[in-house]
Image (tube, rainbow, N blue to C red):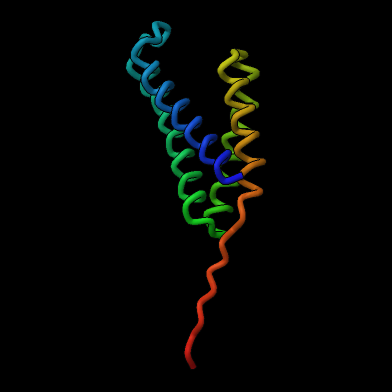
Length: 118
């Protein structure tokens, strides 16, 4: 399960990098403001991947909760966006994020036990 989670995180990173790179080749974005908005969506996706990577490395309750909230909010946004932008890459990203949510739920949290000397 851990290996699958790593693969999915890499998929998010690839999607984010592609989204940011596509900003400079997308002809419909004619103003600087629209290019900044499009690029910032790629940055948000990149930071979502970073949150998942931190959770995958640390495996604490706090990182699991942060990753779950970040993934859920992004997935809700993607469902809303799919109505406005019904394109294949949006649906592929929805499937990827669904998989990330399911897999990250099964990554075991490493409980850190601290012993104090009294």
